[in-house]
Image (tube, rainbow, N blue to C red; front, side, top):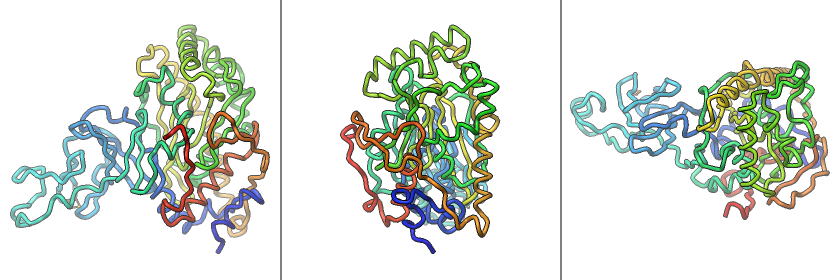
Length: 449
Ligand code: FES
């Protein structure tokens, strides 16, 4: 059996063993070492806007419920009844005063407490008679995820009490996440989730998906048909992300983005490139100007898409979307996507965004379906007895990374390279080898102190 260092050798040979994409034992280890420790994106506050709203999410293979309790506080609760394990909440999202277990009727409030209202229907049935009033209800509430942080509307959770603060975990990648969350004018909460959550399954290992979003510009060829028919935002016969692209990497965190240089509206893919409707174009032009004014030269890259290790990817310019993955098995993954618009944008802008999202992203969108085929066939063609003994090649640009002076802990490596993927798997190996958070290296970032 190979060690983690033999499976992931991104710095000398530039290779990663196919086994980590198909092996069941490694998958089980990932659930504990990666998904049991990392900060995981679990949803957006816009999915639970009112008291007692809930949204069913996942952390690794564990189902969780993101709730807003009746006092307005956000919680992330393990979605399993503490009595005999029944999956408590089975609706995707909604509003409820209590989650009542369908098996024997225990009821839990939206903050996770086992409801303590003796004599009422929504309580522990038979509390006085069958349990002789001896059940310690305080002990048998739902399991709360111990670490929950909200960043500009995004909700993050970690099972590990020792995990560093979320902002340290994000490092300077936070600046790029801001593109998705603060696009309009930097106002927290300025984003609205439009059109619900798209969910679908891919017969592929989960890592292939964030790896694709972290910096794989080399796969443009996959989308050639999309470019040929011209279904990008502008409909001008090519997707609107060409010109001076670079990948930018935070190797010590395992995060990375694809961006464009220089930071200029010509390359922004928004102003002047967004459809034919002058009202929509004007709106995005103003948005763009306000962003330049607000962010100035700090952001030398207008980012388009990126990944926060391990499982959350996002598009930072319009269209703004968050795509995150939930592992099901070594060779199956559930992928979710939400779409963000400025909450006070004119209806015509929202409508344009909605149509663009349907056309371009998600399981029915043209680019996503291209990618899904790649991931599924690559997984299937790596599962066999012989093929699983091979390695994937990540040698592109190895040894050619340059520091980015304006950013802490960042490197760039031009347009076509596998720097970001190497960082992703290096980070994966660090998590897999560590026996606790204390053994996972964390850089200090002056932006987060
Ligand atoms: Fe939930 Fe018994 S399993 S009340």
